[in-house]
Image 1 (cartoon, rainbow, N blue to C red):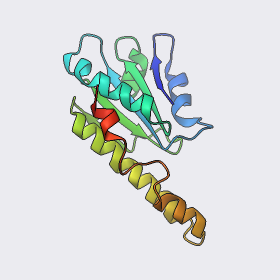
Image 2: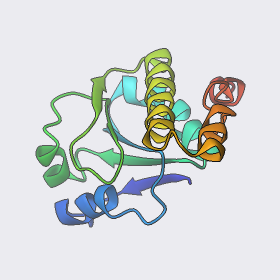
Image 3: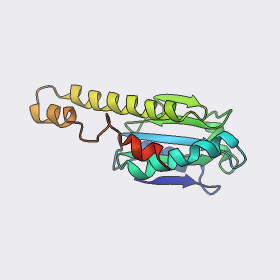
Image 4: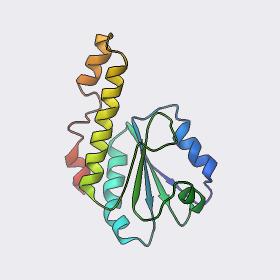
Length: 152
């Protein structure tokens, strides 16, 4: 998947649908709350774009807080950049952090993806093929193509 950028035409209901009505059911949805005037947001933006463009199992949604005030209020955003992580079509985030720390962003994604894969493996311990599928790291979450994420 690639980076989805929300604009002032996107309302709260459309945002909720993006999170909760996923036919493709990505492993993780990352909402990146930003502002055009925010210096730290500008610093981490290339990393976010790189992650979105190089990881088809993720959905990354970029939300400018000034253009999407209703969504920002709904998500209770008080500083930028803020990252909220969602999975399983649930509107409640599984993790949130604020700040422009590339390492924290990458480490959080890896941790949440590994937890997702462990959750999927634990759902059906009787199916050996399913267990092997996740143990062989189908989505390359352990390596996570860090060279692609960190090289600009």
